[in-house]
Length: 204
Image (cartoon, rainbow, N blue to C red; front, side):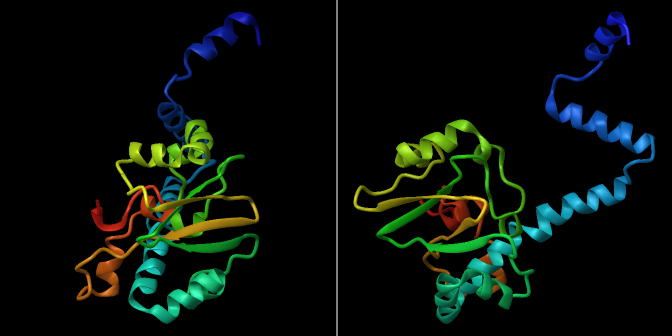
């Protein structure tokens, strides 16, 4: 390839990452390498079925069933398997309970290890260098930036995920939800609350 053509090729590549992905998807589809329906099904599986809805169901069961919550805290993979989710063969999942006295938050300082099977695709901010570095040294400041202001007497514990051990936070159950079903409780659980940068159900 000569220099002129090489320059031309670079000029035709969109600069925005989203546009580049779309362009690549279109090219692969045009050449028959990718089935758009299969790709959409895969994305839908991670975004809606694999997680974070799976994690929300686990949290809702823990809120509704104290015995299940104890099993979850003692052996998260076994408890999660009770709900019919696939076993975690290559990673150990640890559940952390938020209480009025203790607030847990999760980070991965080395890369972006994340419990995909429970929470779906990791958000961009979780993979970003500022979050990965500041969550450990200034967790309260990071939480403030997410809109979560904790009382000074609340202990903040930061957990560093690895390829072998990943964490999911059981957020505090919102007040006034005693009459809700598990399905209704699951609707209050967000991905961010299971990472520990927010509370469930829009709690202040």
